[in-house]
Image 1 (cartoon, rainbow, N blue to C red):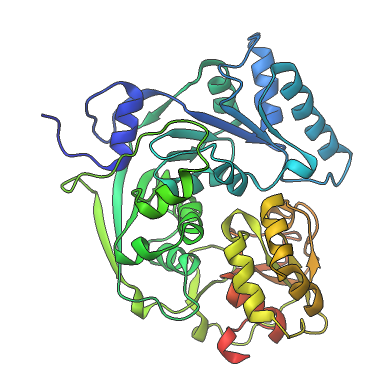
Image 2 (image 1 turned 30 degrees about the vertical axis):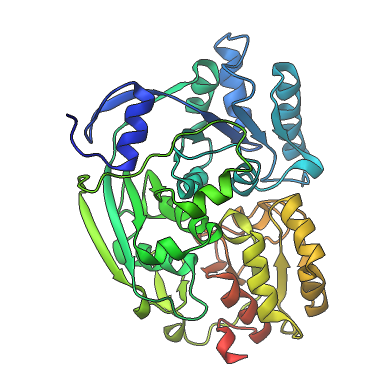
Length: 421
């Protein structure tokens, strides 16, 4: 009889054809789905060609998504997108997303049912760990690793140790998944889960929506995590069942699975969180931030650009105006999110408040375009990283928060919460 296992160990064991496995073991696993974007896929494609391989392992199990510098901001980004277009046509890649069909990859692929519970998914993008919210062993890899998987359909991992995070208590008003993960990163640090499987559990997680779960898993990498997993439940299955393009198998951690650490949080003590420059671990409760004037607020990204996030921001900003001299940029993450936000009147609410609405793109999150910061400027964003120069000039500053805080701050002209309005 094999020893009790965590969800991470179970998924890897199943994909390696083994009955059980232990942390530290090196395993080769088959991959259910692989993805690259307009920044990372061109390098993978070049490596693929250099290897002399004629065809990808499975043209239905690869996604190429142009989402970082689109609509193209310059000649170089246009060349990158063209390279994806040509490779997708040549190889018959089924899931190539470009132009009006494209969106932010980590929102788009779950929405289309392309990443599923119990699978191994790799992506040449660090926030691939987002899909852990579905109970997927999903992790970011380098472009050369993506190339190898595109050729063989396999990759290798060192089996990670797992840390179990247990969230108890009752959420305060305006507190959601973004606050829980920022609080967690603030507690353990940006390397607190280095190459470990972060497993989010407890009654608060059970009651979180899929949007809140995706946000938490998305930022596992900001604590150094290899994956950020949530055991699938009815909420998960309600989300994936009608979307799934393939059959899938649900795995859950055994009751006596072995963890390197178990950390418990009383969520009733957690207020809305703000990550101050220049690391996601530099977190404070909203009441401790003080007077921080802002030049720009961004609501969007693979972390917090889903319909639920836009609904929350619209609720806060409805009937109000963006503070004079401040720029509010709102970016729905996929065409579907855009249409739904349009139909529900959220985009009208933002426009009436004085916001700029962008097309589905990563854009300002990585200082790509459509919201780059000048020297000395300060932004609050619902994105996932606030490193030096992340959104533009190395002498700019980025603060991270949830969509309700972002919307309130846009009205106040400084960092603050909805309760101040």
